[in-house]
Length: 164
Image (cartoon, rainbow, N blue to C red; front, side, top):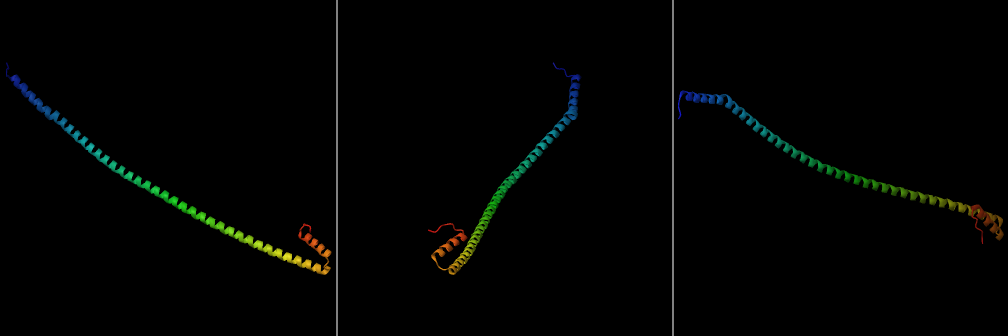
């Protein structure tokens, strides 16, 4: 049977006091520290999420900027190719026109020199014919004399063909 004595009563009072003291000095501070750590961890998760969202936004911005830069570089390359092609075509056209002018000038110069040579040759032939006519008139018009003058004329002009 159970005896309710003073010892039991003092033991129950001691246990209640011990419980209150432990609650006040041990469990209360530990619970407060745990609550503070819980709040700190929650705040760190919240900050990490914010930083991650900002990083994602920056990544999106950089990808957009990079895409724009790629498009711009493609456009710059296309423009450069177009400019180079136009410059090449213009240079080729100018070179062809210059070559045509040079050829035309060469043809004109050659034609002029040909005409000058022909004119000089005509004058020289006319002088030789005049000289031959003078000799014929001065020597008379014999067949042998004419043949001799013809041979002499051919020798002076450099013609080595014999008469038939």
